[in-house]
Image (cartoon, rainbow, N blue to C red; front, side, top):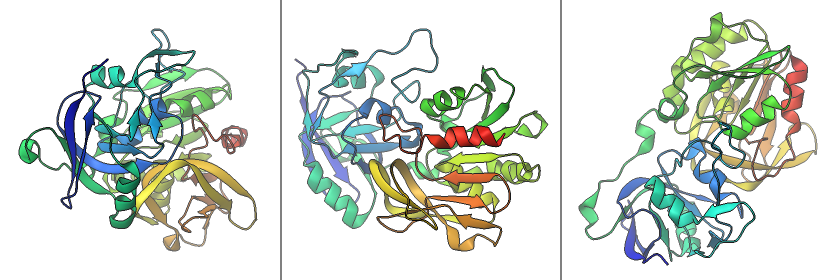
Length: 356
């Protein structure tokens, strides 16, 4: 059994939470956010959209099914959303060291220690979440002895998309149709879902000028941080809109497409991060349960008459997608590819490829 060391989470408002370290014993700082999902911590921890954040999991027992093995041969692993952990730290109420699952090979604590990521257990995550809901997302730091061991770090002051995007062009699959995927921090399950449609996929860095590539459709991925850092991507999307080839965006992709269409974005109080967000298709009573992970939203009031809102969040009324009234351009703020679920909106990938 690992011997746990006392550790503290300090919020920028001065609040202190005491717990025990079950991950890497190192200090760290970042934006403290919470996720309400009951499953999927391997997927969440490797989601590039969490880059620079300290993630609080509200489900009380974490670690009970361990961590699956990484694929030694397949770059698109079945059980993770990227090649590494992206959170700066993990906060849970009760950590279960004795794991049991058919495909687990190590404990959550062992995985965190191997990747150098701190983890805290014994925290009253219900109280912490109530604080974040009241005050909004806050900066925090994990320390052991002195409060000045590390300064508060605001990840959104830097271009996180550039930090997590691929560095060179990568191609996958094969087929009669070609899709360019703009990697703003793409989750691997997006690639898996696109490849199920038997297409050729060209993955390009966030700032890559793809105008010279031959393609039949454009896909804009999810990603972390403030979309204002991605003006280069927005300019490329705006140029691509002149070709009228199908465009599909997810999460950050929704925000960047909206910016290319002339709208703007704003920071949410504490973001949407869960596997159970209800969204309604605008103009109908059709509702879907979705997985979400973002801290910004689109101000749909700034869209011109050629665009319309596609979905609306039933909890707070925020925008959950946009679409062009006459051209094959659309995007959603939620994650149709969500692993482990819900899978209510996976049909969007098939719909997009049919447009090609």
